[in-house]
Length: 407
Image 1 (tube, rainbow, N blue to C red):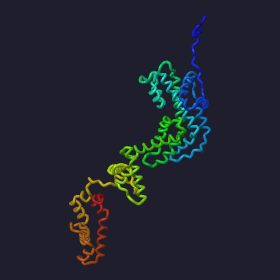
Image 2 (tube, rainbow, N blue to C red):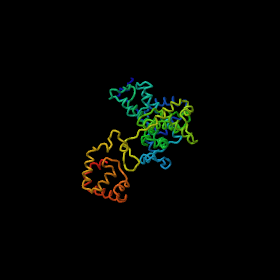
Image 3 (spheres, rainbow, N blue to C red):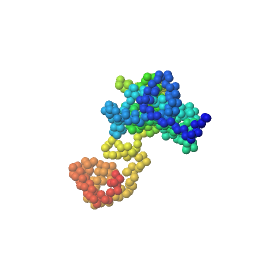
């Protein structure tokens, strides 16, 4: 009699997950480059059947404990805490870059294979595996009404496991290359963008470098990633260093024009716009237009260099404001001066009126007043100073307070 495998009442159990170290994973990937992709596809079937999980976390801890924190010679960009934490992360050498690229590509193949089995088209699966893990999980979350419903023939828990392993390895990959960003940012500091923003932009570009790197070309990942980091930093500078954005191609041409001008100035001559245009292969009018974009916005609240804490707005003239002499009614000023000088001696009052033109006439010199009064110019000066001293007493100042404050 033949019994069914369900006749005993026992249920089939999922196979126990197999934990594979990163070193063992590397051994499984040790095949020739032309056969690598097909080999990873076969591994996807085997790993799914055995529910293999790669122990990326243990590998991370082992690398951190064995790291020599004094090896990295990193530029000091002012971020003390970030620099300290970065020194705790070991940088990848050439061999590690090669192995990490192979691990990453194989996990990409594993993740794409599971998503295609779950109902994704190959192009959609290839795009999804390069997105951040939270977005990947939302896309296959059964509780999300807009999510993709995975086919029943795949185990969603295993798909999540593969995606989490891919994200963990990708993060480890990026961490080993973070020192590349600091050396690049160091060359572009002080150009109008905060160093922390440049570092963040450079770090994000490492993910693009990882997705585009091909370990088969026998080129170091460091060399390839340097290009992506530099392009990201330059783009950040071009887009953020100006209040009014200027197209990147204009700013690049402006940089070439400036280099030509500086080279000619070192030779002791100024180069014309037409000469610059001939060297760059563009019309001279276009050179003039590009140089016209070389204007930067300055905040009116920016402090000036006079050391008094004044802002730029306080130093600019107000064309709509009326000058103080014109804003004072002539009759009010004349009457106030007449009242303040009323109790001065006649000779002193006459000297002030003639010396400063307070009576509406043109001011005259001390010598002319002395000749008319039959005394010396020095005596006139003494009488003038005596009269001014009388007007500087508190009672007199109170009468002229409004006019003194305006002046």
